[in-house]
Length: 149
Image (cartoon, rainbow, N blue to C red; front, side):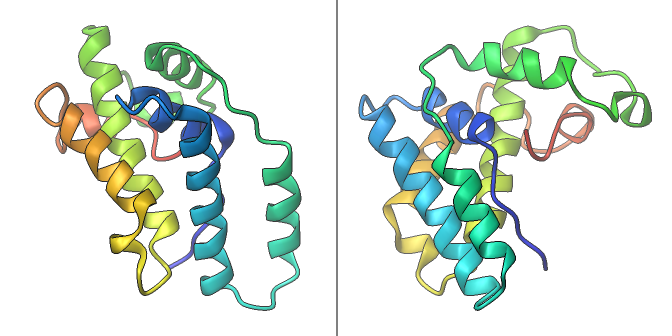
């Protein structure tokens, strides 16, 4: 299994989708946990320093999650290969993209033995729980959306 550093847009989506008011702190926590996972997965590798440099310029942005989703989908270079999005319901698309972003973040951040007991994992799970009834956790819409933003 390979892992990578989620983008600041990806992490901003998760943080802005949350009900937790400590958004900037949560943003930093998620970046840190993702980097910790990469350190566990790729110990001693030179490219870890590149990811750390990338993360230093990440910025928290407070906005509506739908803004992040609309921009990410509009800039998807593989949309033609993925095909059209099988829904026109913007709220359902956003909720489903948030669910997929939660799953992707977990995949990138789970390389430490204790990940599922961390604040980051609990935070991501709370976001997932919030959107489970609003989006699709599997199916055509889920498959048509982005794994990573």
